[in-house]
Length: 366
Image 1 (cartoon, rainbow, N blue to C red):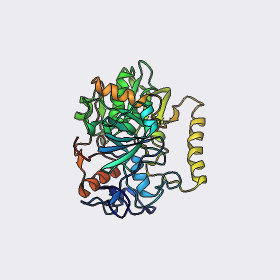
Image 2: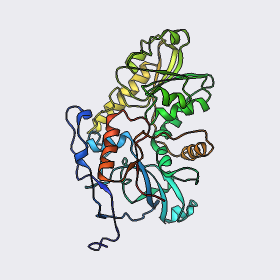
Image 3: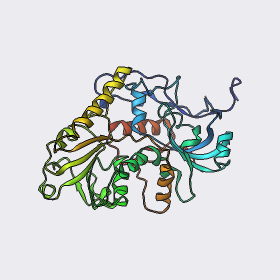
Image 4: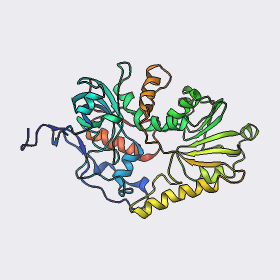
């Protein structure tokens, strides 16, 4: 106990956020995060619709960097400071609300949960509250670290894979990232006849079932003869940038009216939104792109909104992993330890936009 606040816990904390200026990629995030060896943060309390879990593992996602950067403070901003980052977690149920009991959860259940409203936070701690509606039970055969990699990125990959039609020839731009590494696997289960991906990680992706790995450092996917002859019917863009939609519009390797699905909002992964007008501009640009691309013979653009854990999708992911049909992919340095150095390294990897698989922090043993 401390100062009448109730039980305390260890947690990674960020004292404040400031809008980044200049290149987000060059910003040093390591100095913004602290993690004491002593329990200094009050343990969260169970409220309506929530459960308290003892955290075993926590994974990061692009949203963690957006919150930390202050670049999307209009709709993803911590309600108070210091705040605990990280949102997707796996752990053991410690305390339930009536809603948790009604949903069939029990104390001691192994679970995996996706972050709640307002963006990823509260996960990089010894204890966290999770929403009953975005939490599912976890079988013993799946490790806590593998499970925490599923909620955001693999869930987005599943939503994207549900758009694939039987016989599609699929191209994944950024096949080795958190979304891409799961999407290339799910594409085959969705009925794709051929799966290609851009990446430098040829061995990794070949093991995941990719038919052709395109090294973007030396090959231009939009003009390779082999794909001019047998073009792609659908593209999933997990990285954005100039080699994404602007290039797809003139690519010779896509069939007429190919479906171009972007996982990233716009052409810049470090977009900024600070005002309601900013939200309208961002969504308006997407709507305009979708509208204008619906005419003519070129590819048809669609933005994939991946934060939809409802509808049984998280249960489907866990079942696929349990059945050996989906392999959770962790970055080669992961899981990282729950230390200040480990958490800082996790954020550096996530910010780099070049992690191969999910960035995961191992918080505690079972």
